[in-house]
Structure formats: structure tokens, C-alpha cells
Length: 219
Image (cartoon, rainbow, N blue to C red; front, side, top):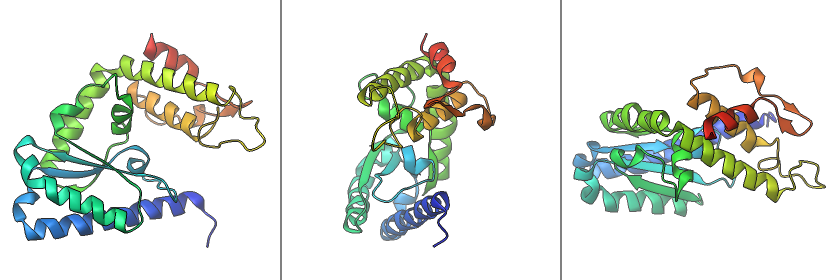
């Protein structure tokens, strides 16, 4: 073991990618019509390509409405096979057109789409999802996404007393933890700011640089 946690998390994501496509390719082999109209994608933490042990596998099948009936049972079998392998699968199935706007009742799905990543399936459906639907989500609902991020971040920080100084700190959800780093990454993407990762540094338990962006996007 090298002790490189990030490399191990990336390797785990790659392994699950291969497993997902092995099961899906079996379905396509049994019914070649499934090769059209279905894109197999990763979102959320799985979409970021860092899958930690016991993390949910955020799997998203983007299915054109014309293929929904045909693909339903095949997607169910793939999900069941992954569960049988001991994976905690969080499965979502939607057409591209239902990914264009942020759902105020369920903002988490829209946020998860910010980390969309292709695993396999129909390239044309994935391109439509990425270049039309998710692009529209980012451009039209940037302020709404910023407001949702601000609210969710406040709630999460309050849960931990607005400090990371705990006897057993939660390195994911505490202020200044991994989730705050994710928030800064999403905000940069919404503002069209590539790179500049060095700007997001942790100082005194807070991530510097993210507060102003949250305020601007949620105003």
C-alpha cells in the first residue's frame, strides 16, 4: 500500500466505472437497441472521480423519453447487480430535458449535476445532457444554485457549531472541511473561473475566498 489516499479513491472510482459498464454492456449485448438513447454517467462524489470506501455510488442514467420503457428493466438489473456486489448505489434516471433547471424542492440533484462525468452509453445523449441541459442549468440558475449552496452550507456549519474544533472533527462536513472545498469548486465553475485553486486556502478553520462568491451568487 502506498498510503496515497487520493490515488486510492481515484482507483476505486475507475474500478466501479468498469463494473458498471460490464453490467450495462451485458444488457446492450442482450438487446442492442439499448445502445441508443441511454447515457451512463456519474454525478456527485462519484462524478468527481474520488470514490471513498463506503461512499454512495451516485449513478445517473440519462434516458431519452423514447427509450424509457425499453431501458427500465435493464437499469433495474444493473442497479441490483451493483448492490449484490456490496456497493451502496444511489440511482437516478431522468431525460435530458429534466436536467435544465434547479428543483427548489430537491436542489441536491442539481448540485450533483455540476460534477457530471461520462462513463459510457450513447455519446449523443451525453453531449446533449452536458452541452445543452447542464449548460443551461449553470447559466440560467447560477444565482439559485448559489442561494441553495449558501443555505445548505449555513445549515451544515450550524450543525457543527460553526467550528471545526471538535474532539472528533468531521473532516467532510465541518467548517473548512472537504465539503467546503467542494462548494468553492462549484462556485468557481458557476462564475466561469478556471484554475486559481491556490486561492481557496483554509485559515483558522474557514476557507478563504468563498464567502464573497456565495454572497454574490445568492444576492
